[in-house]
Each structure stands twice: as structure tokens, then as C-alpha cells.
Image 1: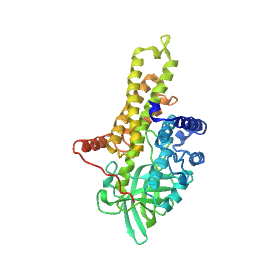
Image 2: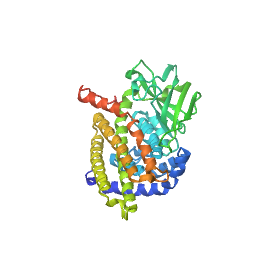
Image 3: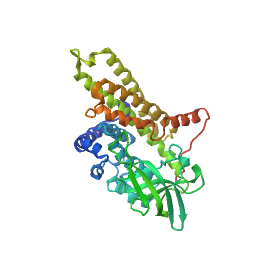
Image 4: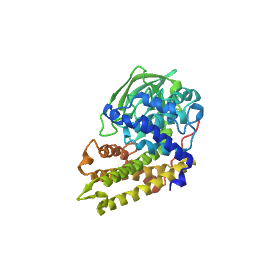
Length: 389
């Protein structure tokens, strides 16, 4: 299957990136998990090696490579078995910088995208609020225009890099209620009235997740990202790539769980033989591997469509829906294959199981995804891409 989607260049990139991660990342994962954040130095190392911007334009310091290099990148990141680490880098490179690259002015790109790809300035994307998660159109954080600046009041929650980041790409209300009145704003961390605090989580321990408050924060009008009141449509457009990425992460986590289980099964002996010889476990692995391989083929196919410019909002929702549920199932079953050791923190399955759980929640819950699919299939609702400016 890989030959249908990956070239020798992709394979070489995988080899080089894997070597980088094994040297620069794996030895530090346990410490970062304990610290509940990754250090700024690793962002700079990614930037120095060019790994922060695999698909971003070379003009700003990216590699300018195709979509399947990003697929390889994600798969290798997941092999580190720390969704917190992956999310810390991804929230900056895959979310904050994606909005800068997609909607930013040339001046904004020169300032934030260039420094971001070097790992010198770290960003976060702040959409979710205490009373507005999946219902993005209900957000309340308000930005009132006053001459040459906006005054921002409100709060955000569950924000990856919410404390560590240097700037915040925030969804704010600049107009009436509903989807038509939302804009995207760049808010520097050091502006008066910005405060943040860390949240404690079940998993993703190496990522800094925070609550952010805005108290009469003054932001110049040139910090508006894209066009005023077009923010909701920008968010929806980026949701396609985010949900595709989460689907890829999910199948990669499931594949990692199977790989770890197979390694353990070959070593663990019970009643005088390795447990890989027990039919019940062999068949359990076979069933899971069939489902993961099928889902992976679906995700790869969608990435090909996405690369060719198709607006696959329904299909991306489908992919995230089934793969995140599959990841939860597979990581749980593989944890059980480890027996009592699977429940121990010294073994890899406990973290993998915990980290998998957010897949069905973040980036649109499974219930919201089902409703999107139902609306587009049953009600024949159509979603349009954001207006280019």
C-alpha cells in the first residue's frame, strides 16, 4: 500500500527524521512528561533542522514539500509515544502557523511565520471557551474596535501551548451573534491584561494546556488576521486539515499499540511458550491489524484528495470519527495483552491508552462529527470554503 502514496524521497525523509527524533527527543520524553511541558530549546532544534515547516513555503523558512512528507512527519512523531510532545509542537506548527500562513498579511508572515519556523516565537490557537467548544459560533470573547485598536475581553480554555506561547491566535467576536460575527486576532502574550494558568490533564502530560483570560487587552488593528467577521469560515476550513491530522494520529497510535504488543508477545512466556503462540491473542491481533490497515488506507486516500485541493469536510469528519474510536479500542485491547504490566507506568501502554482518549473529544467530538456527516448526507447541507483575500 505504501508504494501508492510514498516515494523514495518520502522514505529517505522518514529515515532522516526518525534518526533526529531518536537522538534529540526520545532520551528526554520521560523528563518532559514529568515536567508537564517541553522546553523551548526543542522548538529551536526543530527550526534549525527545518522540521518545523515541512510543507510551508521556502520563502519563510519552510521546506516547501508535499503533503505526504507531512504524513511521514506525523507518523514518526507518534512513534515517540508522547502525545503531549507531539501536541506541543503541533499546536504551534500545525495550528497557529497554519492560520498565519493561510490568512496572514505579508507583514504578519514576515514577523510570525518566519520566526515561528525557526522556533524562535511560539504560537497557540485559542478558540474553545468555557461555554463554547464544539459550537464555535457561540463564542463570547469580544473585540470592540476603538480607533486604531481593538479592546478584547473574555476567556479561552483547553488551549495547547496556552501558557508557554509568545502569541495567541484567538477567535473573537467582532460582530453580531452567530458565525457571521467572528474574527481571528493575533494577541501578543506580553500585552497588559493577558493572563494564563495551567490545567491538569488525564493524558498528554508533556503538553502545556492552559486557560487564558483577556481583561481589556488593547490590540492594534493591524493584528487582525484576514478579514473581519470571516473568522468562523477560516476555522472551518482549517478544521479539515486538523481532523485529517487527528485521524492520522489515531491510526498511528493504534499501529504503535499493535507493534508494542507484538514485541511483548514474542518475549513473554506463559506455560512454557511465548504468548504469541496463543490462538486467542493471535486472532485478536489479526482483527485489530485488519481494521487499522483499512482505516490507514482510507486516511491516506483522503490526504491525496486534500493534496489535490478537494474540500473534503465530510470525509475528514468520517475519518476522525472512526479512527479515534478505533484507537481507543486498540490501545485498550493491547494494554490488556500486557496483563498487569500494561497497567504499570514503566511500560508504554498506560501512557498510550491515556493519550488516545482525547481523540474523540478534541477537534470536534464524535457526536458533533456525526451531526456534520448527517447534515451533509441526510439534509444535503453544503459547506463552502472561506473567501480568499
